Length: 406
Image (cartoon, rainbow, N blue to C red; front, side, top):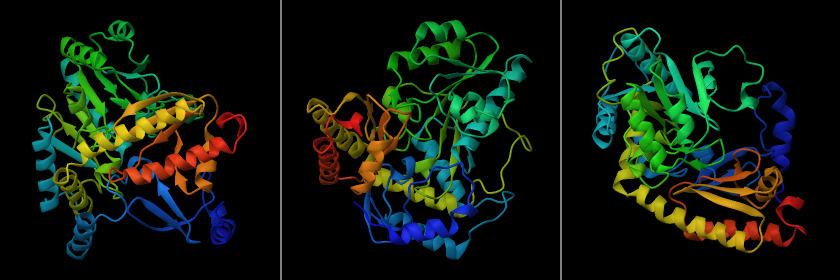
C-alpha cells in the first residue's frame, strides 16, 4: 500500500480549481526516470501505460532531452509564415520512412484527424458535390473535437454533445460483408485504426485491411489510418501500416511522436498531397520549432536503436506472461494485440484491478470497461515485466474468487 500524505494534501487544497471531465487517480506525480514515475511522497510507479501511449522512449531519453534543451535556448516559436530547420528535417524524414509525400503538423491526434477528414472531403467534393461521406468502425475512437467525435463509436463520450457533424457512418469491426454494403460512390474516406486502442485493443484482420484498400480504390475514396496510438514503433514496425502490408492514402500520428511534447502529423500520400492550397487549413502552434525538433529526435532514436523490433520482441514476452496468468486461472478471457500494445479482457469491470495495481506501484488502465490495457514504454525490460506480472499474480493469490471478486 502506498502512503501519499503530500498527494492528499495537494489534491484537497487545489482540486476544486479543476473541471471534472477527468477522473484522476489520487496521486500527484513529481518526476520520472526511465519507465518509472515518482510522486511527491517519493513513491515509485512502473509505468505500463506510457502516459496513454505517449512516453515510448521513457521519461529520461538523453537524445530527446538534449535536443529540447538546445532548441529552447535557440528558438521556441515563430509564426507559420516562416520555415525552420527542424520543421523541414522532420517532414522530410517522415516522408522518407513512409508512403507520404507531404506532412501537415498540428498539436494533437484529434487535430490530425480533423485535417485528414477535411482533406478527404475537399478532394471528394472536387470530384462530385455529394462525395462527402466518411465511414469508420464500431468501437473506434478518433478524438473529442466535434468532427472527430462524429467518427467515434462510443456513446459515453458523445453524450450531451449533439448535434454532431453529419455525414459519418460506423460499420462493424472486421465485417467484410458490412463494409462492402456500406461503400458507395458518395464515400470520400474510410477511416480506420489498424489496431483499435480505446475500444479494447482490437487488431484489424489483414484481409479486412486489404479489402478496405481495394474498395477505396474502386470507389475513389481515401483510405485513412489513424495511427495515433498504434504507430511510432509500438506494434513492431515504425508505422502500423507496414506491419499489415497495406498502404493508406493518409496517416495520422501523435502521442509518441513527441514523447511528451504535444505534436501531431497528418501524413499525406501522392494522390492527396496537393489537396490543401493556401488558406484552406492552418494552425498557430503546429509544426513549431520546439515540437518538431523534439519529434525529430524521437524518430531518430527509434531508428538508431531499432526500437520497433525491440517492441515486437518484448511484446511477445509480455503476451506470453499474460497467457501464463490466464492458465493459472486469472479470469482472463482473452489476450490480444500486437507488440507492446496489448489488452487482457477479463470477465468483469477492470477498474478495481487498476486500483490494486496502483497500490503496488504499477500503472495500467482500462480500455473499455473490461479490458486491461498494457502500453509500456518501448524501452521496458523483461525484468520490469516480470515485476509487474508478479504483482498481478499476488493480487490473484490474495483475492478469493479471483479478479472479479475485487
